[in-house]
Image (cartoon, rainbow, N blue to C red; front, side, top):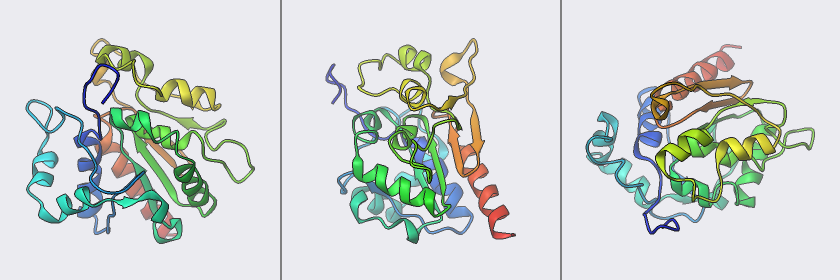
Amino acid sequence: LDPTGRKTGAFGSEFTVPYYAFINAGMEVDMASIKGGEIPIQPPSWSWPLACADDKRFMADAAAMRKLRNSKPIASINADDYDVIFMAGGWGAAYDLAQSDVLANIVTQANARGKILGSVCHGALGLVSAKGIDGELLVKGRRVTGVTDRQINTFGIAVTPKHPEDELRKAGALFECQHGWLDPFMTHTTIDGNLITGQNQNSGYETAHRILEKMATQNNR
């Protein structure tokens, strides 16, 4: 719950859209969370009018739902076992991703091994405490995106403890985004080496496919 009593969690399409992009490409996908166990879904992201086709596919997919209800604790994850570490957002991510030393260490290790690091929206908070191979903060001097302060204010969720634009800028990131008249729906994807990040809930498709393109490039070397 946030301070106003609203339930938080992962935003549906921010993980279902990338999930099926990866599955359709023939990848094996595990789900993890800070504590493990069932990952709460941010209402009303799985309800009309926000639920997308991949949300509906996921809810009807018994194997996918088992992963959601029995996510691996992040402490059990070995970065060497994965090609990509991808972090979805949702308001719930504001309460635990940036605050997790365990996640920061895993992202640090994955980066040192050249793994692709991806995120959308609040998922970028999982990058802010990780370190680069030079010992500096991972995002320092690097181009990244996440949900903007303006979008957070528009959505009425400024009560959350961590805001991606603010935290990324404080960590020295070169923050990029798109603004417009329909600002909550503006989307953007940024690529900086092995960091591939999407601005918000509308960025999952492009971000996931940019990750797949990066993987194909690496595999063809």
